[in-house]
Length: 418
Image (cartoon, rainbow, N blue to C red; front, side, top):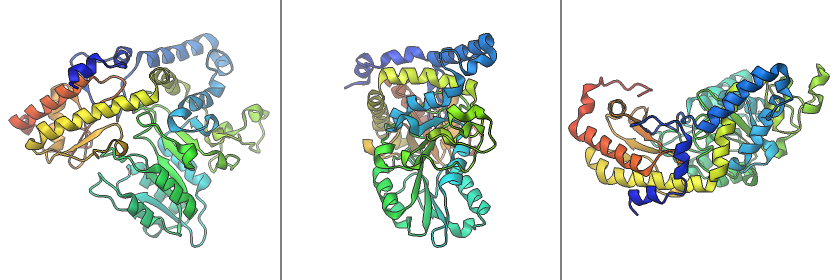
């Protein structure tokens, strides 16, 4: 089927009209920051209107009372993660939530006092893991088990399995590698973690909203995720956490007033009576205005259906990979993303020695990519707003830039931001 036919017959083509798109710009960086949807804009304006009209009464009144907003949004996102409604909460940031999971569920003891991560995990995971080892009086040089990866773009589950020894108490693993988009076999790793008695925490930032998960049925202990990528909630939007029901009732390691059971929170006691849901693991007052846009995006995702969005995403990335192999490989590009559909997330990673300058040249041509050092061009066609014609156009522009070497006009600086 041609790309023209794909666009013409696309049952999800209506979604493009729900986003604020810049004319003439091909936006392929939704895996870093998703674009603003019209429902998200309306949801934010409605939150502002509630504040304007109701003031303090917005906490318990209006269409979406703020007091329960974190739980309401968590229940709406739960189906995307394959979780129960009371297992998911919108709160904090990815780093804060990961700190909470370690503070709550990492219980080192003699002979089992190590944390496992993968070598090229997003830096947050390593920073947080090392800080908790230090706080427990442990040595990151000895107590951090690092699973090697192949150049930051591929990891073999066999290497993780080999590293999950009896002395590992807690494992932080990505659902998708942030450079390449490779999906890990969560079911396999969760089963192994249960067998080994290891608490498994997933970093789902690069898959939440792009891939349909089954965390509850797979027995995943906990997970953290952001909402400003594939969930299009806006820059710095409030993140989320998932905690399996088997851990509900465990006192939060980092407690705060909003860790309280809702029906007893206003008893104002100094002794915490924590919620018996994922709500126990929030800490401070919800950031309402940074949460509101997520409500609008979820309306679109629910209308479209996660299965349909995933199928469209795979068609978009599949077309991109086909074109890259045909048109870009002769220009020195190689694919760093797995070809198999069950092994790739929502973006495609292309390797090229001049990746940084190529990304700058693309932006000059109104194609918005993402650079990851040392040599990765990341392109993320969103199933919510990217057309097949845009994928074809972006590859054609990148091919021309590479052929004509117009990227040479830019300084050879491998900045972290293209």
